[in-house]
Image 1 (cartoon, helix red, strand yellow):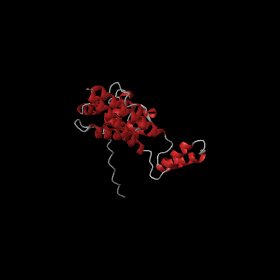
Image 2 (tube, rainbow, N blue to C red):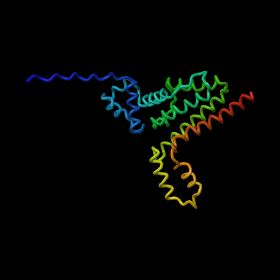
Image 3 (cartoon, rainbow, N blue to C red):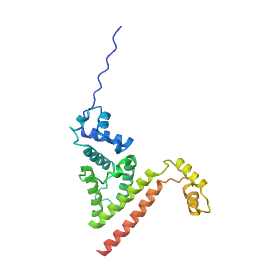
Image 4 (spheres, one colour):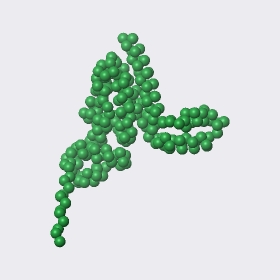
Length: 228
């Protein structure tokens, strides 16, 4: 009988720093940063662990590359854009990136040696605010306030015992059934008249709160301008 045609050998893409970093991100997305090891990373890439060190010097450098890759996912404002919609878009994009990579929340501002994407991101944010007329101090405060709000909301979302609106209704309904309306009238009112209403989505609270933060920044910016 004729021999079957041999399948060509699968060509493995060459190992690069970018492949190492993106494989590390995939592992962290799955099991968290605590579960990321150089040995496990090498296994995911089908190489020997020592091969990794031709492209990264240490696990710390891998973590730095991962943080930089996350900043590349966040929409950058363009210097000259109207600062308020630019900061709003950037905050929404940052939340989306951090929701995709929840391990990153504790690492994004931890690097003593930020990468190029991180520096480009920070330069664009500060540059947009400065171009709009924010003082150096006011730009720093605005940047810190916006990031505190974004990071805090993402942390809160990650800790909630539900992800979908259906799960929320189930959790909230269980709490309502276990509560006494006499002992907790305000919580009962909040649940029945807000959380359990059709169409409620906790994620909507993010943009509502973000607009309040931006309102406050706009007022502070106008006061700062008037005082100068």
